[in-house]
Length: 222
Length: 222
Image 1 (cartoon, rainbow over the protein chains, first blue to last red):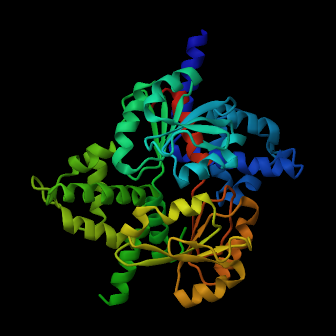
Image 2: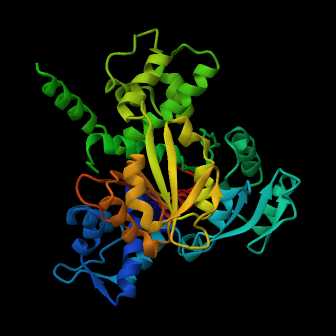
Image 3: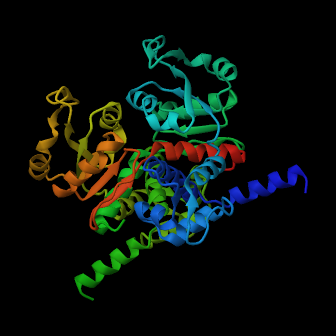
């Protein structure tokens, strides 16, 4: 089997992971980190599932994608499991990101410890407001939006965080895509279109709050 | 059929909606709002699906839960569809929410237009930092955390937005639950436990970014 075959096979496996299981892998990683800090060098599927409200079977099914790491009656080796999850998620490397739209949400994201801990580094800030350009925030200088292509190329940034108003989101996304950005995390409450080959994850906070209202209305059935 | 039966039947229908379809209903609502502003009094499932990257069949399946609103060859009446979605989501009423943890993310949420547009009203702010207590932000005064139970009862708040650090999140969640809060939107990067009857939606931004990294690694297959 050639290297190419293995690579395709790996991609095939990963492609079968649903968005939901990818989300769960992230949560397992968070929980494993806590368990490791508490000194647990082995963990069971029920330990992992319990804190997240998942069944053992669901946990074992998700982790089966990572290879044969678990041993019946013994559990999973914590460190190796974390390494395998990081590799599958693609966070065993550094990802450089640019952030466009410097408001309160941007400031919150810049100080969000979790991003750096998982290897996401915001390397440049952009805003269209001349009053903001030149401001220093957490060691970064806000740059004008027309600098985007040059800075992205020079920094080798692959991801873009979009915290601009809804009206501006599509045009900024187009600029990011044109500048070679491969993935966009969109916080603007609007539907964006990106070409094939570019990934998009949207965080619409109203959707989350509406989901909560729906659940409360049903009577707390989470 | 008694009123009780209808109610149970309604709940049964809603309970069958997955979290994913609830999320899609929110997105349809956003899209319908745009279409209505553009003057579209009727919409087709393909119009709705196109902007969201969904198939007609998926859209029709999701909307079938709302009753018999669509007509073959004619489509859905925009306003009635929006009313039905709002009713199903439980956002055809006002929801009062308190926000605990007044940092940059809190300030961003306070100014997030989408919340108010969909009937979510933040009625009180709390922080444990004496330096923040008494500050006025967007017309609200930051209150001390030990005021939580009294203020929640007086305001009739049902939802809590949690933007405190991870270490403080569970203890604040417990206080909110004790004070009668029925649903928590958690932004702290940690796993929370709430008792039955209380709903929890967690927004872990690192999970979203890891999902993006995973998709980019796969080569843009969103």
